[in-house]
Length: 594
Image: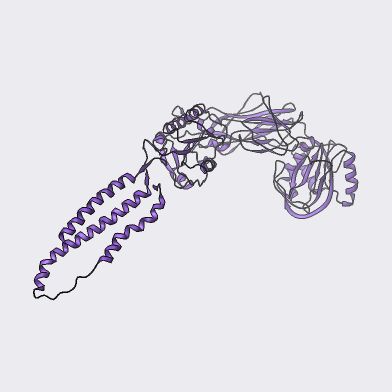
């Protein structure tokens, strides 16, 4: 690609036509002179005129080329050339993908070792005038000297955070936007298909193509403990494997420190295992495969809460709520009793709907005040809206509801909102619903989420416990209201309830409100990391237009090519000198001949 140091001189290129214009202006026809021997003279001078015409055209071409050479030399053209020993001062972002898949071993060598070697080769060409940023899976951009960056690269280990390469390229574009040096982005990655996304960067991109084929792999993608809390009897666990290995894989499912339940599974189908819960409490649940070339995805963990099932009472005339309660009872998820009241405000834990007769709202609000509940039912809102989806239930249609207002200070305990306003709230062991559980109020009773929702209300929410959250390292997780601390392995994080929080690593985190445990967060690798297949050249070129591809082993030679420019001003000036000498010779011959 040709560039110019002084492109404004290109506006003067039309001046190169001056010799042609002057030639056309100076053309004149000789006068016709009568002479007796005209034929003889024409025959004698025909060859002479032919030679003069040829000299005229040669002189015109030489003068035009001379003007072009001088004007182009003034513009200072440069041309990009790979492999030059030197380059103009450059600003480079080096994207080194140390996401979990970089730990996969091929031919006895982890992929990350190959990426580190390639990064060292790129840094070999950096000079003191270059600015180099290092971007890794954690999303941080580090600018430092070559020596410091080498030390950082040598100490890199496979991260548990997934890197989206399209996002990394957009970050590189923003970094280079305000730097006047020659920009370039170098991507060193195993180039998983699942890690690529589209990006328009606007600066040269160089991508190193791995020269090895990733190993066939299988990992644990889903570990679903089912509805929580677990009952004291047998409970069913669902596991799903992901990857590109078609072989049958031995797997063990384990609750706490108990003996493994051996299983055999293949990629794709759901694998089910039945485990006895044991004593009440929080129990770690693990699914684990035999080790392979990619160890990071061979194990997946979560946490289960074991409690006696709720003993609930409900009004049979409340048709939809009663039908859900009976379904849960018959399925072994609910027992009949008076510990939990479903539908009205009882003496203990209660899930409270608006009364059928809204004239009873006053007495209900006074009863809530006597119980110390800081929420009140307000006026009706009749408007078709959708609830916000969350951990309690997905988005559902709401056509009629009552406003819920908080008494005193900032509202706490909001579980679900509609149009930004509270719809389901909790205060201690009392849960208020903004709508009756009837189709005239909301589409929830006729949705597939209704029975699990009633299960969560009776067995968890009125007991002050939230759903088990899941997440991946580095990705934001929305925390429930009331959570002010998170703990894991003795480490404590102070957090704000209702805000987003990014778990730093895999593991089981307990969500606390003071000293009370409200729930848990199970953080595992992103399942997409298990799919090690490499993207093809055509896929890369389609997602990143204008990208340059080079073998990973030769990435150092191809780097800094955006700043490695061959200057053409010198050759153009030499050409102009030769053309000037040629013009002088031709002009002297023409004068002598005429």
